[in-house]
Length: 220
Image (cartoon, rainbow, N blue to C red):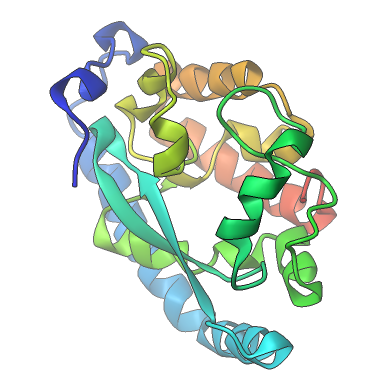
């Protein structure tokens, strides 16, 4: 399912003219790196899956309904870090939202499981997104995709973040993650990436993601 024509009117000024070879190189890197990581990390992925299943007996993966480039809806996957009925419970927690704008952030979210807290601290719950990168729905680097429910509340300016393919990591990820509670600040980082995007910026973000994840900064 895709958004309406009105939902996909993005300002072309948000993206700079890229060299013709850059998108092809970026996609090649995405495919090669995601494929290699899925193979190398397969024992870790299996161990995490077992830990999630043993935690409460629920599903291992969470079907993540998000919006991709140019407003295209798709289902991504994460390791489940919350109780099975998390989406229903969220309705009762909206008044405790600690973020501004359409995003929901809660530092001590009661829906997160004990196993989930460990996975979130080191972003291990994000690893299944490598499959989305391999498929082409996502990239290694790019603005984080919004939930479809969040996207329904976006302004035209906020929709500009979907001018680029969403990614696993981004400037927001290396700048504090959930410590950035102001959605406008988050949006500004995404638009800065879109204006400056290049193979070299992607490499820099990837390199800075490693220490950011190991420190667990801003992981809720």
